[in-house]
Length: 623
Ligand code: PLP
Image (cartoon, rainbow, N blue to C red; front, side, top):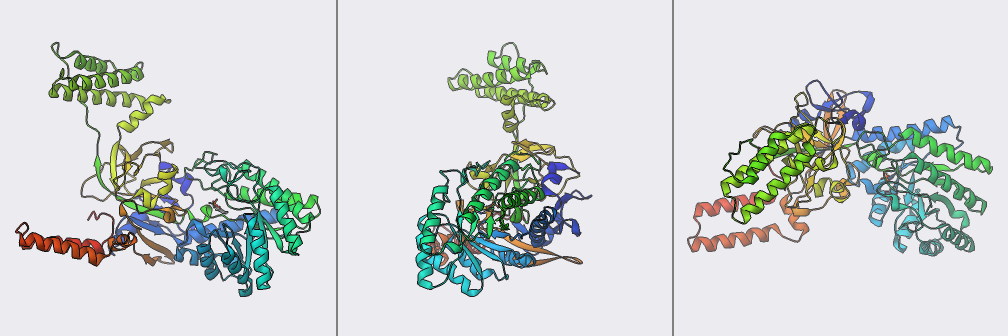
């Protein structure tokens, strides 16, 4: 069943089973599925508490297989006389277990890695042991970075140093002279083609990275002068992550193909065209060019790249390049699911349609009349009247003209109006803008065991939409509408953008009534790219527990458990030593004992709790 548009964003990995649980099929169409609810239960029995990040290496493998299969198909379809050699941009998710899996899964396809910084180069150099795989070296570079990359050739790697700033050309020339090793060099072009969406600014003349066409020509001159023009083999561009419209990708390839061809004509030893990242993920499942979606699939993407490049090279009678892409989001997003629990819920005040008598204050009578008159014809106007009367009632109260009891009645009448108006508005096809807020005003707040800043930072920072839904009780009607509030003491620590039950983007999410004492689990899906590493320690909520679940012929196996941070660990990031903290509280407690402000029993309890907390998870324990 298509609740929360799960088929749109989840296919082929996530769906709903007959028991009303979300299931995961990590091997895609190749069989085997698990109930996420049962999985979480089994993990809880092993003392792995929520929030829990579930990683499915089989999904990672499936994503790599798909990407390579799409390029293989496109190459066959267009008779492309060349190869595809993808690389994974380490920045998307650097966690060791994931990266090790990724390199292994990529081996049959000679899949490589892309480093965007010095520390990422260190990881990539140590991890990539696949023969013939590329090691693309991007980002800002200093002498040490460049020397390390050049020397990697001596280890049998294929490091390609991509010039992002003109100054790097001389650094590369000097390093190669000094070491006596010829580098493999690429240039990153600032295309004039505009990207689209959130990261559209990654291109154009004023983009942060890359060389303009005059700068590329200057780089060519400098390399030629140093007799290193033959080392220039690659052209790279990146027009931004999550490109939602295929048109932008096509335009960029066309422009880049022409630059490629021209560079070859200028005498560079052109061999590779690296189209960067940008391959989008359909977060809302709508298959449109909405920023959280994309109006193309992986096969369309591969086809367009292969076809455009072939055409440009054939026209000029040039051999085609090996095609490189740097897709991270499309590879790493699906494999991670963050499951978290609801801790409590606060409902909006309930209204009461209490009649107002003749003698009551005019404002109460107005509210009562408004409430009674609400109909399909006037509900929008009635909302404005009710809001205005309620605001007036509060002003009158502040000036002493309305009693506390009367104010309470005014508020109850106001909420009764809102309930009636909302019931009508929900039945209309078109909801006027000013009533959109009403849905939010009337929503419950579900308090969840999670930090948005740690686990879904893009949701806070750039309003990125992620699919969020309950992972069980899906046979039951979700009768509550809610927004989510996280554990941090920050009013930004909330989520109020969702794919609702019917698949529309709404500010409230339909959820099941929360029953205190009964577990209620929600999950954020497609969160495996960027979120983990960009998460921050706001309020000192640390890394969550992460578990790698691998499918086996008979079920599944818990491959790795990466325990989340303890309080001692997060406190050490801000230079507190657990022993010192304990000592400080112990001293204060001794002093209080001496002065008889605390009993021995209380002091023992305090110290016990304090010391235990330091060893524990930073999140709340709901059991
Ligand atoms: N390559 C470069 C140079 C990037 O800056 C990025 C990220 O923005 C990527 C690749 C990954 O792109 P994507 O997130 O679209 O997979």
